[in-house]
Image (cartoon, rainbow, N blue to C red; front, top):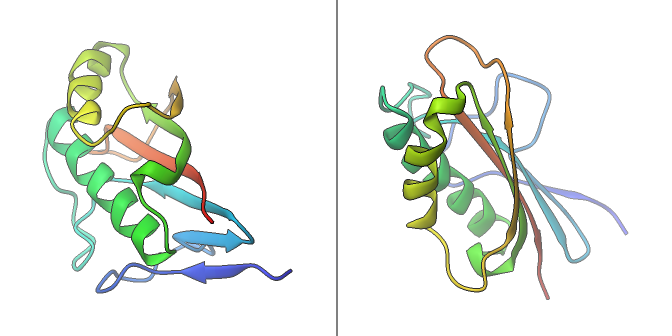
Length: 126
């Protein structure tokens, strides 16, 4: 069984050696998505809420390109730069979810300047 890379329509190719999503069989792994406008690559928003909203849009668009949706996600991983951003991120994140909620891990990391959040996803389809 081979792996296949997927790119959201209209999105710029990543500047690093990675695929936005890879599917192998029923598994779809979405690479960490930041709050970048897919067409320009420019960061969208200066608050963690704004950036979470754009990162989730990017995750969902990438899932769709690979033939998956939010309801196929079994695990999200959220990377934040500041513990104080948790509540705001969580409120926006919840806007994109349906019940039963997927599993999630949230960790605190260093990201490039101007970035406050990064989100990846693991989905199972079929």
